[in-house]
Every structure is written in C-alpha cells, then in structure tokens.
Length: 274
Image 1 (tube, rainbow, N blue to C red):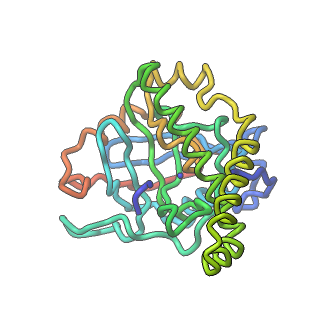
Image 2: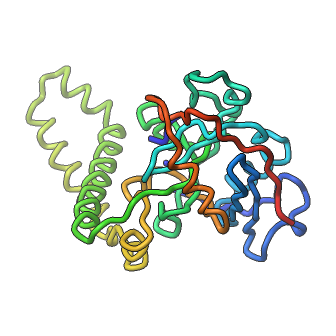
C-alpha cells in the first residue's frame, strides 16, 4: 500500500482502557519504536483519536513487532506497518498487506501538515477510496526536502485548483441522474446550462478558501522541509519527538527497484511510553 492521505474530532477512550495512565492533558500519547537502527519516539496527537487509539491497539497487540521498513525513499519518507513483511524473504514485493479494518480520515489541515518528522497514515488511492480512509496499520514518517517561496506558491495554486475540481466533481455526482437524462434526450442546451450552474456553485462554495500555506507552514517547509504536496490528502496524526537521526539513517539505506531496503530494517518492538 503506497501513500498516494475532512477530519472529525471525537472524544474517545483509549483502546487500553488506561487513558489517564498514558495520555497527556491534551490527549497526546508517546510511543517508542525500537528499530534495528535505533530508537524513534513518536508523539500521537490527541485530536486525531481514531488514529491514536488504533496505533496504541496495534502496539499493545504486538502487530508492529518484526515489521520491516518496506518502502524507503530518500528526501521523501520511510514507510512501515505491512504485516506481511514479517520474516519476508529478500526481494519479495511488499506494501499490499494491511490490518483488517481501515480508519476513517481525520485530516486536520492546516493544523497538522507534512513537515519533516510528521507521521501520517498510508492509504489506497482516491479512485478506490474517495473518503481517503487510512490503512489500519501502515504509516510513514516524512523526511522530505526544503522548498522555496516560488515552489510553495506553485503548489498552493495547484492545490487551490485541485480543491475546486473536487468540489465541482462532487456537484456533478450529485446531479448525475439529471445529467444522464439530458444526455439520453440529447439536450445539449440543458447540459450547458447545468454546467454553468455548477461552475457558479463551485466558485461560491470556494470563494472563502483561505491561503493554503500559513506563515508558520511556509517557514517550516523552507527551513526544515517536508512534503507539502501531500497536505490535505492524508491523515497526519503525530510527529517524531526523538530519534530523527535514526529516521535519517533509515532513509539513506540502499534500496531495490521497489524502494525496499536491500538489507532488512525492522521495528524490533514498540511500546507506549508511560
């Protein structure tokens, strides 16, 4: 499952039933990954509770023990969590495995975005997953690269156009029956009028869209880097708070044509930090 990423805030109890023991005041939870390259400590956000609780459940069930970092791309990200990667032979194609259930999206952009060190859920593509639901087990840690103001301006413009197209496509889907009826009746005038109406509705619905990148985000993408083109597409639900040197070591691993490291790099074990 490759990363190809509108949230809901729900207050839930942690899957362990020991909420007060592991959560910060804002619901954040720390998890430590003991990897073959060293330890990485993650902070899981309290305002993405479905992803936080699912991650804790996976950790406590031992689901991450022994999984490989099966997809590693320098200056982009490192990905893990495929259950079929445990004890996988060298050269085997990985990435299609997943936990039984998918997780409803909690895309809280621009609160959480793809800065260097961000943790986000992998998912299948929009063509089969228009709700952008997350993998039940696979996640990636962003490394990325730095961007200039000009590059960010271009991505901001592209993102705005993509959002408008998404809104227009949704309106088209809502009017599908009328469109099909007019096509059957060869009512070109009616089709043209409806298209103009939907374009006007799209402009109205998107007229108050805010600037895609906040000043804080721009500064982060220019100074520490990240993968801004993924913003708003995947659920970002945490960040690395210790061990980015380990992440950097993993991202520089030599890989094969499928981006799998030639020498296995794995999560030996994972634990919730009390």
